[in-house]
Image 1 (tube, rainbow, N blue to C red):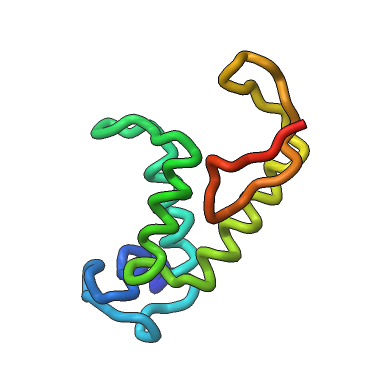
Image 2 (cartoon, rainbow, N blue to C red):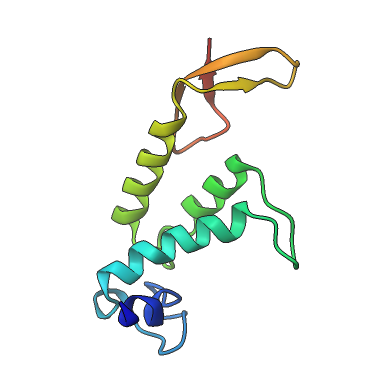
Length: 114
C-alpha cells in the first residue's frame, strides 16, 4: 500500500519524516515495515556503513523502543526473530561449534549454547 511506504520513516515520537506524525497517527502497517526497515538497514552492508553485528542491532533497537519504535510491535519482532535462531549451530569465540538453546531478547549477548 502507498500509505505504508509513505509513512514507514515516521517515528512514534514525531521525529520521523516526511510529515512528523506521532503514535496513533501512523498507519499500523507502516510501524511494522519501519521495524523491519531499521533491522535491515543496521544489519546489512551499505555504501555508507558496514553491517553491525546481530547483538548490536538488537541492543540498539531495544534502546530505541521508547520514542522511535512501537514497543509492542518491536517485542513481537524480536521474540519471533530470536525464536528462529534457537536450534541453529554457531561458531563460538573459542572456535568451537555450539547449538543455540536459548536467547535472552533483552541481553542478546547472553546466548546459551550446548
